Length: 482
Image (cartoon, rainbow, N blue to C red; front, top):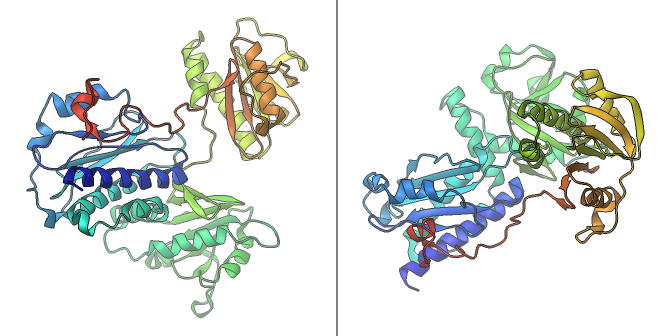
């Protein structure tokens, strides 16, 4: 295998492992990379799912119209110095997370993935991309004879490591390099506890991890003797203790080895907090969410429904932008309440100047959703079978609405009656957006007889299924595979 084919293999296998790992951590995700291996090499792009589409002018400006990126290459091409990495600044492209670097084996590389709107923070994903930079530099340095192909598998299983790396970086900034908190035991304990029911119930309550040297500053409601402190490895015992802080402002306090005691509503100066909410939970650094956890693994999602499609429809409508923004906040509040309390609901957002007639429990005086009292009542009415009917005047015109319609192609029998009735209804009524929230908190947005979910669905690109020259990709020329 010649050198170009070997580099192509490294790139594609690294990207595939990275994509599969991010799929598990953040949901369906695309990955792309631009790179030049040796100083003076042309810039190459690998974008198998069209992640970078629309950003061609920016890449042309940065890498084709200017040669500053080549002048910044201070490292001599030397495969023995693959670990000497110089980080490259995030390109800050809209909707994307990027991270790159330079080394003795790869003159320039920049990895990209998408910035999902429901991420707690992009920190762990950035650490993931940094690891891809390092793995590619290492693999190309090894050459084909020593290439193991494990980088893809390593990146596929990197979720816990990404969370750990982000926490360590943040702690070094907040506490200094001499911090004594070991993060891996904390993360392992959190996942084990989250997966341990007690008398059929999943864990609820907060568990705080703090530095040992700060324990003396805390006011404990109850503190265990040092020789009798429950160890984190005894997951069943910790799970039982968590019941003492369930549904209260109290919190269990631990270091990375044992449970120290119980505090009230006090907020420590520094803590890693695991907030257990039954079958899922959230991990935070101080008050800042880092990620969620469920099903024995960490996720990037904040578990709040993604309503990007609704926001786009409202902004593209004839509504005044301020009115559209206010309506979006109302919709978001009702949807988030339904998702949090795990009950399904349906919202009909009527964008017509004169609202259409829907068979429902009508209200003699439409409910003003700008008022907190009205919005709170609407949230409660969303529990009743049927849909809420909301107009552009931000008033609830009816509830328990029945949505009728005839069969249309594209119905999804596995999604149930609520979903398919809404789909049919939007096919027969113009200027209507329907949002369906299922009991498992999945949200579907529909208009004109189709869902407004992301359309790319990881379909391969016919333009960039293998690495190609950036010059030809950015200028829509005939492509040369590199």
